[in-house]
Amino acid sequence: MLGENHLLTHEFPEYLSAIIELKSTNRHFCQLAKRYHQLDHQIRGFEKNEVPITDEHFIELKAERVTLKDQLYRLLLAHANQG
Image (cartoon, rainbow, N blue to C red):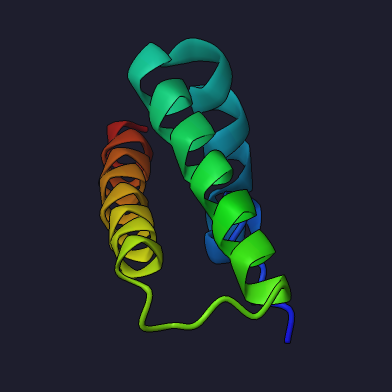
């Protein structure tokens, strides 16, 4: 079973322009987004290869992805509230 796509533009379609802008103007956002993308790609690869969900490392990766998603969302909100 192929995992769900968690790309930022799919997770936060209403913030598409902010995502594009922050990736090019905010170094911290860009670094978080790159790590988020790497994790998402790695997790979906594990899911595609049917790695057991109970694998401790896999669960840690998913937890890190959630944490990064929350951080990115807070940055997007802050950016939207500036305008």
